[in-house]
Image: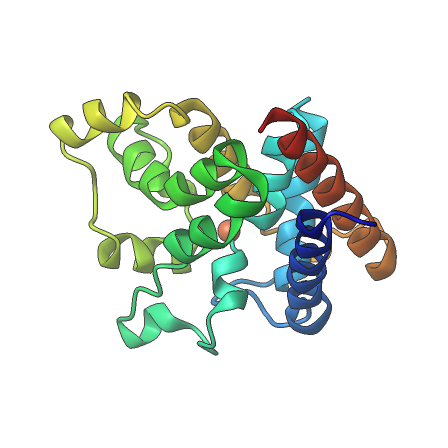
Length: 199
Ligand SMILES: [Fe+2]
Ligand SMILES: [Fe+2]
């Protein structure tokens, strides 16, 4: 008999995949890419950088909180912070553990950190990222930067954030839609299996 945790895991992975099957064609709020293109581009950038599977998956899924919530359009234009990084981390932690959920939880704070610590970073942000920065707390203060650097997944969160900013290129999508979704599922299976063996 198949253990119940395997059945539960399969159902959770199918639920996550369905979010991208159903919502992947939505335009990423305020950008010129869809949700699936943005997720794919971030995952591909992580893969090209030689990131381990868990960080590749975090890059793929970092904005799953946008799809999990029901907000449509561009929340920042309404002055609304959708807290998608927290929602995403809550969803991902039980399935994949902290190596995936923590970079996701921290990817918004990483933007605040990079604006504060890298002079040229703010100039490269997209208009929507600039809008949301204010809603998300603005530039980090020195004491916040120090606390952020002490986070166990600080380095991964900063890497993910850089890929996040680069992963908004109009028209860059080298896979078919189905191949991209298949790749996502394979990565989810790999990381969730590794997680189960670690527990
Ligand atoms: Fe995000
Ligand atoms: Fe993103």
